Image (cartoon, rainbow, N blue to C red; front, side, top):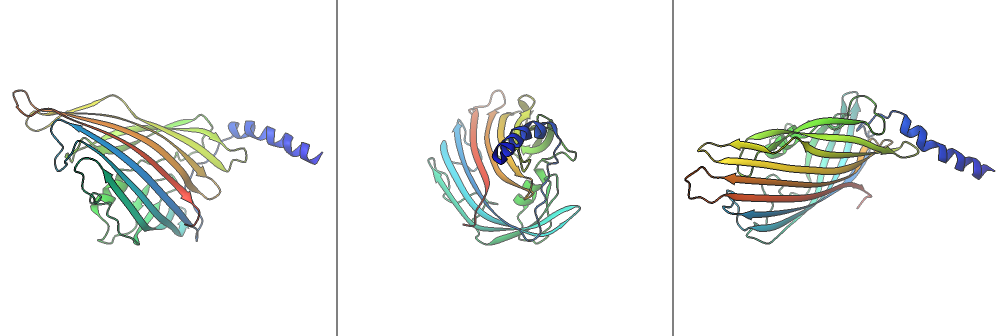
Length: 273
């Protein structure tokens, strides 16, 4: 009888969970240490004129990053987290790609950065040390605020904006929009599953100095799991597809160039390694 009662309660929970509103926040507990692993693979194919500073037409680059997120302080504004990079493994196959990663992703074991993470997912640097690279500062500044401030129901959507470069070798940026959706919540409401798609809008075309034209289009499709008890993102999968086309001005003898980049990312919380 007891087992039957438990089973009947379990059957009834999903319907109530789907109807209720849940608040999505990043708010881990003071003293927690979260072990994170990032696996990323990027495939780049070039045709025509190579992008500035790059050689080879096809290359695959991989990264494996192990980090600890040490929660030092939590208050109403968010969480101060000491991010410690324990190890970085990189590799390149094909083309004439450099064996070392690009600047800003240098494998420095034990490097530390103090971050402030707001409940809605906005990340800023709490560390003012000069050792923090400008690349990292720009990356964090351009990350989208992920979660809405108000509770949402399963099926609710919201849109967030972020900035990305307009093309290889160009410092200009454009704003793209990503659509998030609360797909489901576990029966005990402890885990929320969110998907993301974008960018919203059509192909971006821009003229450069000298009359060349850069065309950019891309897509992002990802999913994440938020552990609402731990107050942290425990799993993130993403597939990113970006295409750049550089067409020289009329009359130029420079051939057009194309760059196609696909990347897969998997960020997850792991047990102590």
